[in-house]
Length: 123
Image 1 (tube, rainbow, N blue to C red):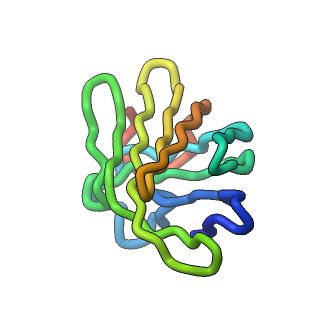
Image 2 (image 1 turned 90 degrees about the horizontal axis):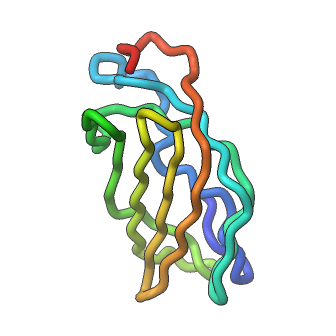
């Protein structure tokens, strides 16, 4: 996972899990495009991330959405820092919202997801 360098939050790929060891619970494999986003404190680079929706990996599968909430570590100024990541992906529209929070600061970015070919159950 890449972190914040000189105040810029690089690609945040938590949830970009490999399929190996997760095939039993894999629901969907999604590719999500996120645009550049920034606040006064952080900037997130535009990115394309692959998410393997895996209930064993902490993802929740609801009728209308896939979601993930959990702790992560990011690097700020060369130092590992505890953070929280929240992702919600609509199963109907493919719209995604990702929020990173750390030390009282947060950044939310919205993107679009599409289904990738996978051996998992289709949604």
